[in-house]
Image (cartoon, rainbow, N blue to C red; front, side, top):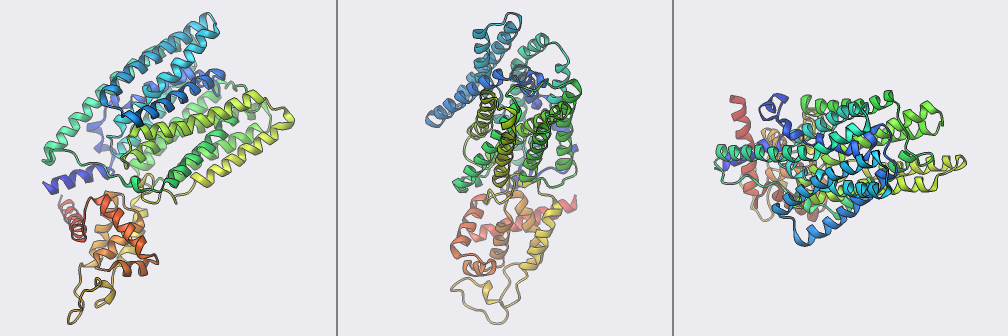
Amino acid sequence: MGTSTSNHITAQAKPSPAFSSFLPLFSLSFCGLVAVRIWIQCNLYDRYTSTDSGIITIVSNLARVALIVILIAIVVRHGFPKRSQRMLGYASAFAMTAASILFLVNVETPNHIVLFAACVCAGCGIVWGGGIWITVYERFPPDEALIYAFLSLGASSMLGFLLGLLPATFTYLVAMVMPALSLVMLQRSSQLLDERDEALRTSSGAATLPKRDTVYDGEPKSTFARLIAGMALFNLALGIARGYPSGESIALTIPFQAIHQFSVLLISLALIWWAVAKRRSIRFSTLWNISVTLIIIGVLLLALSDSTATLAGATFISISNTFAVGLLWFSCYDIARHSSIPSYLILGVGWLAHVLPREIGRAGIWLLEPHSSEAILVIAFVVLLLALAMVFLLNDSIPVKRHLFAEFRSPQANASVQAALADRYAAPAGDPASRQEGEPAHDGATPKVREEAPYAEHLSQLGKQYSLTERELEVVGLLAQGRSRISIGEKLYISENTVRTYVKNIYAKLDIHSKQELLDRLEEQGSHGQDESKL
C-alpha cells in the first residue's frame, strides 16, 4: 500500500518525460479557457483591433474588481461550497451572455444606460465565469497545466485575430455562445478528471489520493507582499502605457493585429516546447522579464511619436499584456498547488493585483490627457515603475521555501547540485561530526549511517519529487550522513535554529516525523531508481 501511494505521488509531482505521455489523456475540453478568452476579446478588448476598448474596458474591469473584493470577503467569512460554486458558475454564464446581448443592442441603437449595464454584466460575469477554471487546473500535474494554459492562450489569440477581421455585430453573436460552451467544457473536464482519479485510486490501491503539499503555508508573509507589490507596479506601468500618449485607445492596423496575436501564439508554443518537449529549465523571473522587456520596448517606441513607431509600440505593449495574463494564471496555479489556501482565493488576489493597478493607470492617463510637453515625464514615470517592478519580480530569491515553477528545473541544472552533494556528503571515516550529540564513540572507525555517493542521486530524485530547495537537499544529505544539527549548522554556516527550521520544513513536505522515516524515504528513491532501470 505504501509503495503504491508513493509511486502515485511521484507521478503527480514529477513532470512526465515526453509529449507522448499526454496524448492518451488529451481532451479539447481541457482547453475551455479558449472560449473564455474569445468572449473577453469580443466584449472587453474590441477584438484586440485596438489596445483596448477605452472606457468600456475601464468600467467593466472596475466592476470586476468590486465583485472580486466582495467575493473574497464572503468566501473568507463563510466558505465557498461546491454547490455555491456551481450556482455562481451558472449566474456568471448568464451575466456574460447578457453582456454580449447588451453590447450588440448598443451597437445597433447606442444608449449610455444600455452600455453601462453591459459593462457591469461583463465585469461581474467574467470574475467566476473565467475564475471557475482554476478548480480544474489545480487537479493537473505541472506539465499538463502548463500545456493547457498556454495552448489555450495561443489558440485563443489565433482565433481572436480571425474574429478581428469580421464585423463587430457578428463577433457579439459568437460571444453569446462562449459562456455556455465554457460551462459544457468545464463539466466534461471535471468528469474526465474524476475518471482519471478513480483509475489512479484503483491502480494504486489507495482509498484516497495523496494530499498536495502545503509548503507555502510556512512562507513569510513578506514574500507574497513583495510579489503582489511587484505585480501591482508592473500593471500600473502597463495601464499607463496602454493609454499613452493622449489617453485614447490606439487602433491597430491588420498587420499589427497579426503581429500581436501570432506573437502570443509563437511565444506560447515556444514555452511549451522548451519546458515540456525539451525538458529545459524555466524560471519565474525569466518569464516575467520577457513581459517587462516587451513593455520597455513598446514605451520607447511610443516616445518616438512616429505613426509607425506608435503602432509598433502599442503592439509590443499588447503582446506583453496578453502574455502576462497567461503567466499570472500559471503562477497562481503553482502557488495554489503548494498551499492550503483555496485556489480561487489565490487567483482572486492575483487578479486584483493585475486588474486594479492597470485600470487605475489606464483611467489616470485618460483623465489627465498629458500634453506633449509632459509626455516625456510620463515615459520617465513608466520606466521608473518598471524598474521597481524588476526589483520585486525579476529574481529567484523568493519564495524561500520553494522556487516558483520548481518542477521545471532542468536535469542539467540539477546535475551540478547532485555533483556538489556527492562531494559535500562524502564525510571521512571516523569524522566525529557525523555522530549525534551524546552518542558514544565506537571502537575503530565510526560506522557509516549510509553510503554517501549513491545517495547523491537519491537526493536529487527526492528533491524533484517533493519540491525541495537546494538548501533543503543539503540538509537532508547531512542528516542522512548522521550529522547533528550543530554540525550541520557549522558545515553550512547557519545557526542551529535555522537548521531546525529547515528540518521542520523538510519533514512537513515529506509528511514524516523522524529521521528514520527520512532515511526510509531515501531508500525508497533508490528502489524506485532500480525498478525503472529494469524496465
